[in-house]
Length: 179
Ligand code: S3P
Image 1 (cartoon, rainbow, N blue to C red):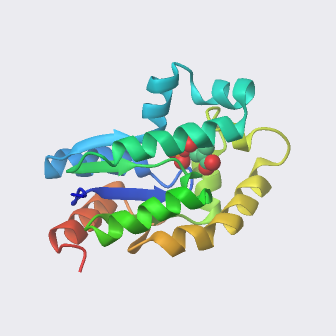
Image 2 (cartoon, rainbow, N blue to C red):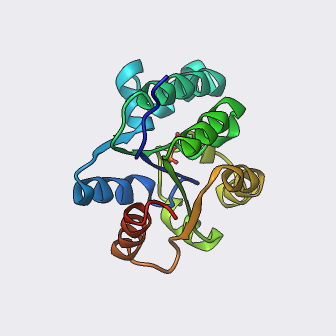
């Protein structure tokens, strides 16, 4: 079986800049840009908050896994993934497989203060709705950190860096072949 190589896959928590960074990296490297959340909206015909409220999180996760598998049938892409993609073991297996076949998995991180600053006015993230969203962010980050770490080739902290610096770092890793 021929597996695709040379995708850059961005993982990390909501608000770490995966979409913003991914789009720019794709433009500069002349690769296709794919955002799994956008694909989910396209496939389902529903916005993400509506999927969560009407169908529930497990329906969303199943769709996310399906979309991710489909996206991985192509190569030469920058793939920005939803922040919760790594919580499903099947997605982590896919990420391990992609790494073995030459894809680069980059984990974008940010401090809690930075995440809070970036996410507090956001209405599109159903998991942060309700009481005490700052604490929810903190709890989810704690739960997920080891999962991101398990599948990442590299970590880039976006807290103190301008987006251009992060973009340059991703491109540098890609040009070095991830080594
Ligand atoms: C989620 C992150 C979101 C989106 C959904 C669930 C999560 O993507 O997939 O709201 O579980 O962290 P972003 O990381 O692009 O915001």
